[in-house]
Image 1 (tube, rainbow, N blue to C red):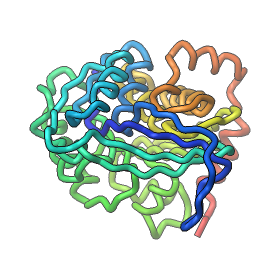
Image 2: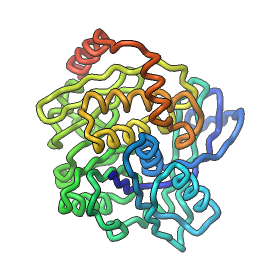
Image 3: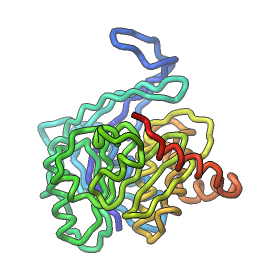
Length: 312
C-alpha cells in the first residue's frame, strides 16, 4: 500500500496567450476550477495506476472547497484521513496556463499548513510514504521519521524548491526532483549526473520535461527518454510521474519499468486540462505505450550523454 501525506488545493486556472511578466496584465481566454495540490494529485496518480491501495492524510478547511476536493480524491479511489482545520480555508492555487502549455503557479496553503505527523494513520501494511513540500518542513521530517521507524520507504518529491537540511535528506530513501530543484540542492555540481551523485539519498530521480527522466538507484543508473505528445497543459505532469512511479515500485516493478510507465503517464497528463482531471488510468497508459512502438535506445543514449555533460 502507498500512503501520501501532503497538500490538497482548489486550482483556479486561467488560460492566456502568455504568462504575465512582472507588472504586466494579460487578457485571459477562460477560467476553470479543478481539484489539485501536489499531494492530492500524486495520490490520484497512484490510485489510478491500478493494483495498489492508496491512502492519503491531508488537511482541509470547513469551506465549500473542502467537499469538492474530498469528492475528487474519493472518486479516484483514494482512502482519506482528513484533519479538519476550522480556522483556515482549504488550500488554493492560482494558475496561469499559456497557449504553449507552460504555467505559472501561486499557492495559498491555508489548511495545508496545519498538517502534522500526529495526523498519520497507523502505518502497518504500507510500503511507501510519498510526500512533497507544500506542507511545513517540520511535518515532512516528523512524518519521515515515523515512516522509517515503521520500516517504510520514504519518498520525497522536493517541490516546490526549498532549502532542505542534511538531517531531512538523510531520512529520504527516494528523492524526486526536476532539474531546477536538483540544481538548488547540488549547486556546485557541473552536470546532472554529478548533482545526483552528490546527494546522500539511496535513490535520486530527476524529471527532465519532454526529454524524459534519469535515475540513480544505489550505483545503478537509468535513463528513460520522454514520449512526444501535443501538450495542452503541463500542470500536474510531474505529480502524475511521482504517483505512478511510487505505485509501480510498491507493486514490485524494477526502476526501469517504473520510470517508463511514469514517463508515459506524465506525457499523457499534458494532453488534457487540469491536474487531477488529466491523470490517466493504467489502461490508458498501457494503450499509449503500445502505440509508441519499440523502445528508443538511441534516445536513451542521447539522454545519458546529456546528463553527463558539464553544464557549469
